[in-house]
Image (cartoon, rainbow, N blue to C red; front, side, top):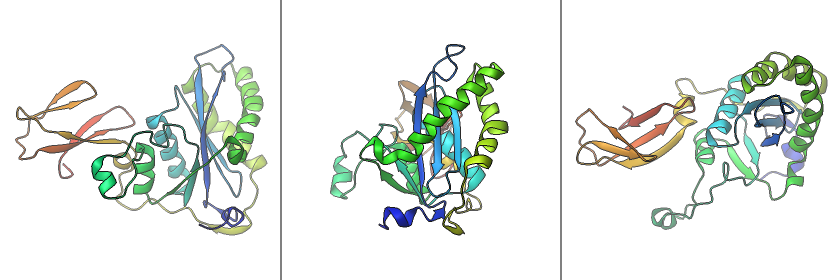
Length: 242
């Protein structure tokens, strides 16, 4: 690993990502969480409001970030269950000397993004300070606009607040090189940034997933399939990329 000081030199070298639970609408609307990320070198901020802090909201926010800026080299996370698995390794994983991974960690590794975990809130100082700023300025601006839903808030974030904030507070990186990678041609981000689980294909061609049974109409000669739960809620049952 390069040193912490070296990591700060380049735009796209390290992204701090976290969720901020707060009364963002001051009782005008439901409780929600701002899942935000900030570039460690420049202070460039990106965020998205969601109903809760979980795997699909985190994936949605990260997808929108890389659609705007590209794929960063690394992401710095806390040990929230969304980001770091609390499950014990399976026998197969132990035999292969692998640790259990969260769906979010698995997706980032598929994209070639290094995952680094913070050991304390103080270690994520930049994103924590950013949230403190937004809990003051963003709340006041949404109050003046009468914003009370996540849909309205996200439109306000993307069209006005974040561009204005970044113009004012973003600083040049110590090195001009941009280490964000372009999204590889032909890569389907929805197929990577989703919940993937292997499931048995029963003799009656049904698949059990999340306490529901799904009927497979194709005649497959397979014992297992992969269930993909996309960010938009769609459920896909895949076998050999079909």
